[in-house]
Image (cartoon, rainbow, N blue to C red; front, side):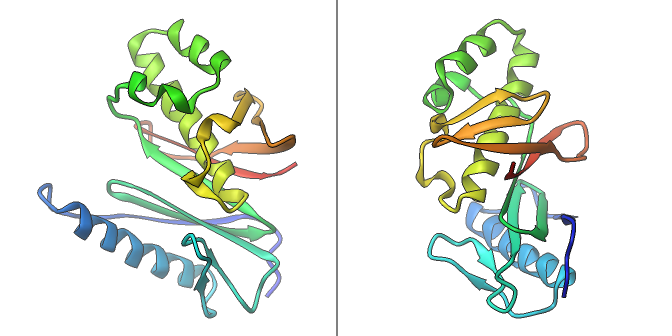
Length: 180
């Protein structure tokens, strides 16, 4: 099968508000596998850190992200990474180590509401790149330097990457990361 552009598939999960974290994770994993198989119904395998791939289609990239009730997958030519998050109150001081000094300085100049949204945008940009390179959050997000979020420019370990914002409801943010 020849895939020439990135294709997305997503689903909202309808879970009770009191669902356990373990049950939520299992539902997210099950739905992500189903969404991937809807895009390409061939055998799926997983790398050591849990990244999915198609043994029979090694030229294809596949990435998964989930946040609370949203599960999203992407499939396309070559390596790719996606991450989505629901914009919600979070103490950014607790994850300050995830940001470069320049990013942290920028966050401090914003209103509380703007800080939350940009904080989640920076986080999803970083995690999408780390998924693209295959390490996920086993590497420090601070190592991913968001140079220009508006134009989707990011650098990680002397390599440049391109970010594309995902079309999501207003209370969510997310990015697709690809090689330049």
